[in-house]
Length: 127
Length: 105
Image (cartoon, rainbow over all chains, first blue to last red; front, side):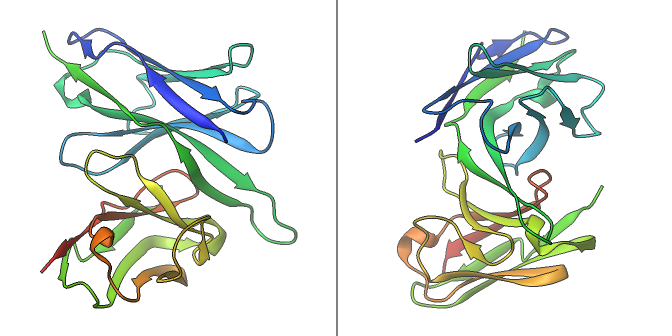
């Protein structure tokens, strides 16, 4: 079955850029009706949706982060990536990648849900 | 942006009891867009319910979802020890509610 694995530096200095990659295995990032998402979770807090990308490159971002976030996809490597600029301590969190299934429905809105998650990677912003 | 508000923030119950968790949207959303997740400490969230009432693969039938418009509910009919966790609702595969912590009384 499809599995996701986050990778990237665990420590980033303030004002620098956080870059993470999510590798998709067990299936093609280009197949099916899926979005590929990033979510983060500061220690002891809830889940924050960062944004998502379709295999065509179409993106949607959380307005609260939009000015600092870029999500991109590399279909040749079966990966998608997160780039967050000008980080501060408030960006310290566990970062998850996830697959959003868009289940097509007849005569009804499509279903949307995150059915596959990576294990998460901890990123600390500190000098 | 639609805001999801979950209540209560913390729910204290005993194994065997029934749990009712609420998720209220700031405006009406399609049932197709509403999902529920369970998260245990140190783990990624797990999909429980999608389209407001459809159980995900492998989810026990003690978990059920209901609701429409702005009010949605996750019900756990008889709590098992492994059900004590944090639960999140989500809309449109994007924004989450703030979560409900289900703890052992």
